[in-house]
Image 1 (tube, rainbow, N blue to C red):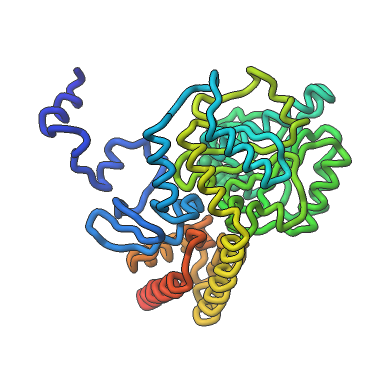
Image 2: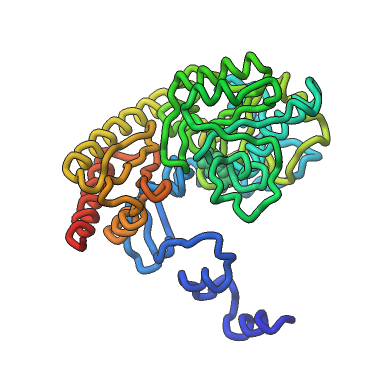
Length: 420
Ligand SMILES: *Cc1c(COP(=O)(O)O)cnc(C)c1O
């Protein structure tokens, strides 16, 4: 036995009750993150409590994941039921929950085939591999170029991070996969110049999330569709962050009236239970024949059961109408906040309940400071880069919770202004 394990075993009856703090993170985790000082221990809806019992109003949803709020009763019930029934089989067998989920997703969207995996990166990896293989079979190796946008985010595998448009995430990981080009988001001329016959796929987020909460122009997405049709490239919409009701539509493409060839979803699809999906047509799906792609957990009964329940809850006209209503209330609230604090915030942008507050010049580079000040007041918010405070409350957010978030943010900002 190694010496460290012996010490742990000797001083604690069980690792299950080992006392842990934020400090423990720095001692035992690979430092890929710099988490907040507080450690959340319990949550319900948009309410969350840390180790000391302090309450927070959660306007992050775990980065647009827990869209039905924390510990939603229907999801707890579905997961518990499935946990007592069947966990895992492997891909040598199918299962009822995944068949129901695929049926529901294909009935709800343009797609008629689904592939399941465990994350957004994997869903995009599958989409990109499909596009490469499809073009390879149809036009040969020369049709392999992938076009995506600067400031986009598509995941952290080497392929998806290379397709993502943020060089800070690829630096030091070279050599990167070749034949990937980036254009400015919403730049139609750049798209025309970049998308030629050697392009196999164009990948775009209908609303850029990590890149600063920037919605696509409808004209840009329409032009990408037209260019893909002209050149035989596949249009991939990465709806990992903006899909599953976040914009007030089940998927953002529905609001734009532009249909992709492949759509990727993850994050809110499982409300916190890991699952990703790639949706496409049966013609394109045939590219990924038996044995050409796969993953051990993809379409696992636990994940599929949760996602099916999420989809069933979100994809209701009244639910989606309320998301749009809540969005209007939150936007109006933030516009008033900007009017009252022009020295802190300059504008609000985004779609549905994925909104970015752009910081004003006097607070340039300080989104993190505002985030920390809000947390101290008991409000959890996200950032999207150094210039944008990102709000992504659960889609079940009430008007009273929007008013409370506004109040807490004002107290936080007052504190920052006083300290300046
Ligand atoms: C979060 C995100 C991903 C990556 O998803 P993971 O589950 O972290 O792999 C991909 N695309 C977009 C748009 C995202 O927001």
